[in-house]
Every structure is written in structure tokens, then in C-alpha cells.
Length: 379
Image (cartoon, rainbow, N blue to C red; front, side, top):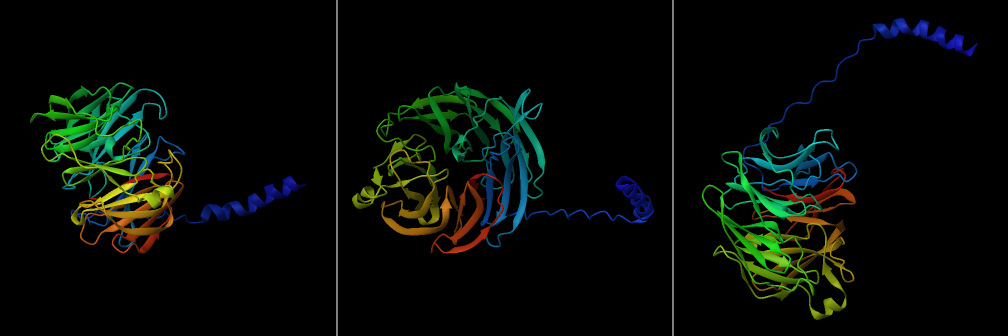
């Protein structure tokens, strides 16, 4: 009986359903971004641990909190690489012919920064390093000409890409040395397992012409530096697990270590203050300031999130300010302008907090920032 009633209802209602007009939803308007990026824009990179075949990058306006656009960036996404003129956006990406399996293809995808559409790609050796993101897995030479990508199979090497000609120049072995830190128009350095640095020099064609290894400048067994070094003009700033700062001057093209200094006083060390996080350092070069995420933790807690950001004068090593964050954070970034913003995000709670970098005041928060945001980049 029940079945007959249902059939009867369908007979009665079906003619009316067929006459109903279904209006298609209008397509959202295509937005073209300004050619000149705002200094308060920030790219938030999402490795998407829930489904790593679908990496993302989100562009946000720090002044309004407005979401401006998104890029889809493939498997095991590490992060975007932004040239100084922001004429292109470069993204080292990996794809498999069957989605999550099959033949692997690694590419450098060129994106138009106004329409966020791919414009070209360069196929590179299928061995780019994919791990917990950091900015130093790939980098551009100081004149924006060559992109250097770190490879790990576990043999170590780098691929060199000519960005002007949009072609792969070649690959060179860098046994025992990792990461990419530019030191000039045709040179970069890498961190070696013994605590030293490898400086690689190229010619005008991007071909490697020289490799020189330095003596160790820290003890990797006693207190290693993190792989999250940041650049302050012509100095790379390394920080150890225990909060000692090692500046390395690269103005001559070769690394020259400077005097070590401490982030913490003796009393603060007694309280177990330490740096930590995914992107735990940021530099504002115009004011010579180092921003560091800090937490209280035991030995080897260098990946723990921080509730504070402490600010230092890079010229003197003096502590200038302590900023109490509204939420736990694993990554920070600071814009490069004269009225800088500080961006803060936690991989376990994808909400972007935006602060005045000078006063430490929380200005606004942007929710639903992907799934597992890791590192951030500013134009």
C-alpha cells in the first residue's frame, strides 16, 4: 500500500517538476590583480597533509583580510618563489601520471601574477626535495635570472633553471650539502653536514664553474642551527636549537662568519626559552630587526609552536620587544615596507592573524586558511 502511495505522488508531482524553470548560477567575475603588488599582500602556502596530491597557495590582502586568489600546486607542495620584481610567480611542483602513483614529473610552473594563470613550465629532474616546507629548498639568484632547486634521492644535488630562457641549464652534485641560499647574481651557498658551507659559483650561462667548502662555523653535534636561516641584506642569519645566533656575511661572494650572540639572557635560559616552529624567523631589513617565535620547552623542542614573538636588533643583538600572540603559532612573516605587518599562522588551526609589526597589536584575523598552512611569502 505504501509503495502505491509513493508512485501516485510521483505521478501527481512530476508534471509540475518538469515545468519548473531552473536558472543557472552566474559565473563569478574574473578578477585581474594590480600589476604592482601591495607590500601587505601575503602568500600562505598549504601542503594539505590531509590529501597531499593537492597543494595550495592562498593570496591574502593583509590590510583588509580579503582573499585575493589561489593557486593549485601539485603533490608535496613546499612553497612559491617570488622574484624581486614580481613579474612572475615560480612554483616547483610534482605530478604523477595516475594522480597519486605512476610516472613522476617535476616542473617549474610560471604563473602570471595578475591573473594567477599558468603561462609556461620547465620540466626538471624528477627529484626535487619535498619535506616539511622551508623557504631554503629553492631560491632565485640576486638578479632574478636563475632558479636553484635542491634535490634529494638521497643523493644530493641542485637543478639550475634559466628563468629568462625558460629552460633547464643542468644539474650538479652537492654531496653532503643541502638547502639553497643565494649570495650574489651567480652564486649561492648550501649547508653541509659537518657545520660548514658549500659555495657554488656559476658563469653567465648558469653553468657551475666552481665549488668551495668552508670550515665549520658551528658544532652540529653540540647545538645545531635550524635549516630556517633568513637573509638580512648581505648577511644570512642562522639560529641554533638553543637560541644562539650565527651571522654569516656573504657580501664578498664567500661566507664570512661573524660573532655569535645569544637570544636569551641567563635567566631566560633557566626558564627554558627556545626558538621553534616551521618558519620561526623573519627579518625586517629596513629597521635591522629579527623577529623570532619562542616558547618554553626542553631540549630538541625546536619544532614546537610559540606563543610569543621576541624582536632583536641585528646590529647589536639587543632584545627590543616581546610580543604576546593571540594564538599559538608555527610560522611568522613580516612585510618589507616602512609600515610593516607581521603575519602569524598555526599549522593545526588554519587562521591567519595579522599584527602591526611595530606595536605588536593584533589588527585582524582571517579564518579558513586552507588545511595545514606552513610557510608564508610577501612580495
